[in-house]
Image (cartoon, rainbow, N blue to C red; front, side):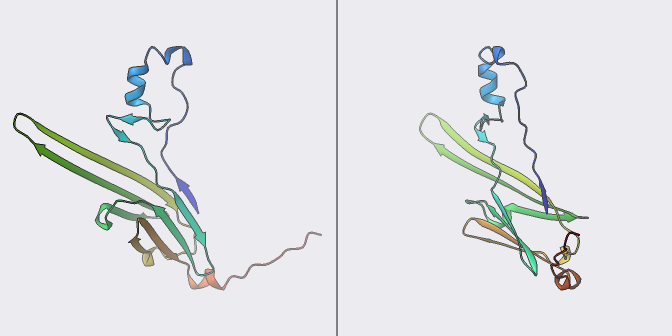
Length: 150
């Protein structure tokens, strides 16, 4: 099973210019955990386990609700994405302060042949999104075979 994640890496400008453009880099540099107006780029950690009967995918995504997730399968591509938005408003005598938090991610995985994409089960428990992708009967029957080198 392969995974695709969109993350930009590498410097765009030589280090001589880093100090000159530092205020801009602090806003737009997403390479080193920087932020864009206070939103931090996060990509959930993923574990993928292959068993005899299925594949299990676990994503660490604490603080979300099951309604925040969108899981789509198109062809052999499984895409898991989420979007959360939190707004707080505090009114006092002479001013209003409004704070909001916005978080989003998207992870895509290539589903191996011999799996049942139509039978994928997803559950969200204790901050972990768990997906179970069952294998087909034909794939389950295939046994591991040792091949001797001649």
